[in-house]
Image (cartoon, rainbow, N blue to C red):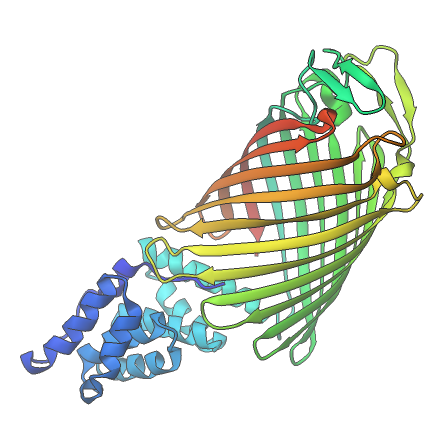
Length: 458
């Protein structure tokens, strides 16, 4: 994760003049930085090495070096500047940022903490974010723990991923049907409330080696009385070991979770997850992940109508139990531009194989996602993305001669976050899903809007 200070803060409040003979190179570097051209600014500084040691030049050359990926040179230049002007806050902030980029967390923490007491506005927001990341890094060599609680409300116009009541559909091998308005598979909308609690801890045991664990519980309840049959509850946890060496971080974890619907256990997931993160440079990170999971479904009793007339009937959900194998790759790119854009692109492939050899419940899956995160103003965050997922089922849907099921699912998501403080975050989230299937009963649209408040105990 690369946190950048807004470019407007590069101009510090009081720079001592250093003479007209030396103003031009420093002013030229400053102008390039204001134009968001750090690489060009750094190259100009490199071509003016006779200016090294002149305070005004050292400051701007130091910032240009940090922003262009040459943190070592930047730190040296800023340290020279501070020998002359030790009380300049802007220079101290940039030096702390340089230590942060180099991974000298204790020195960065000391500098940021010294500035924090009198920080306001953009500087305060930036310092808090850096300190949060440093605390996360400290888990490499110090035991750390945290917890959170999140509450929210929302609206979902298709809580059961259903087809509009009254729609005519055709099921291969079974003929044409009309979706009953009161049927439980008919599209249903409702408001809901949600709450989530969780915590995590990290315990280092050797240089670069640490154990970690986390647990969480979630509850989602719908507003309409009869829609409590769609209420969801989940809980679970995972634990594992991580190993950090140079630019590579390896993780291996075992997890288990339980999802319940209508107060009945629905599916238990047990998984083994592996992950490799490679920090290529200050701006690029690559992640490769793999998962082996077992999905154990429980038989349940379900209503066939929304008004629950007729009571519950037996549903042999255990037939769906399966084994899942998946891999994914992600590229994350940070840019030194206004709003501090962070681009993420990922691809994935998976196979779900039914444990009861029911081919039409086995599938191959592949897809991807592209997303972007922005910081348009202090204490504000914006993210947006689009995802695609293809599912190709293995067997005939409803008997010999019928096609196998194929789903194409697109999802767009966006969020707006307000970081009220280091602990409290307010967020608005929106999701739009469109799924098309060659089996029309699985074609649907869904729109969801959430309002959440999250408090982190740090």
